[in-house]
Amino acid sequence: MHREHLIDNLNLLVVDSYEKMSEYAAGFVLSEIKTNPNLLICTATGSTPTLTYDLVAKEYEKAPEIFSHIRIIKLDEWGGVSMDDPATCEVYLREHLIQPLHIDESRFISFKSNPDESKQEVERIQKELENKGPIDLCILGMGVNGHLGFNEPVEKLQAHAHVAQLADSTKDHTMAQKTKGNIVYGLTLGIEDILASKKILLLVNGEHKREPFDTFLSQEVTPEFPVSMLWKHSDVTVMCDEGAHSVR
Ligand code: GLP
Image (cartoon, protein in one colour):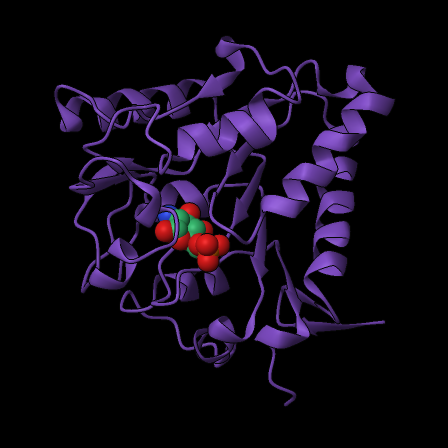
């Protein structure tokens, strides 16, 4: 069972479980890939999109050719730990998308987690995005504090790729808890980079997201709650499960 709502330009799909949300999301992503074989997909990590990615990856067995030109750009990365640290978005994305879909290195744009100069690293990624962008499909999750990537709540959001100071709740994230090192900062695309995407898919699940998701649905746009910036975009699809959605 699912309920669909159109709120201004935003298409909200509420389904009854995480599994269903992931099935719809994987279907959405696959249909975008079939429409544009060169799709540049920006990928969040975390617990939310994992099953979606695994379902997309499953499709490789049936139709490997549809993935031979797609490109992936990593949304964000934990900084100060080695690339093979179990906490990194690098390890996550390689396991769930890059390896199963056989994406070669030239089609993967990826922040290094341990650059010598973090500022140069974000500038490198920004140039890559300028040369290879814009993002066609941006797949996002939402932090419990409303962050998008590592665009944390602040008075003024940064437009482009930058080194971010992590909020305390972010440092407690389940991914960060897996580190064998010491996470010091975040590297992330900026809010304008995200909003320049042609299409955005936001995934939200679980009761722990209900309160922040309610705040999002209030439609108040503020840098203190970065995910609210998505209300400024004209093509956003949000998929959530009933755990995250209070009946209004
Ligand atoms: C993490 C990541 C984000 C992710 C978000 C939600 O810190 N930096 O890219 O979307 O927080 O994570 P989760 O899906 O585990 O709730």
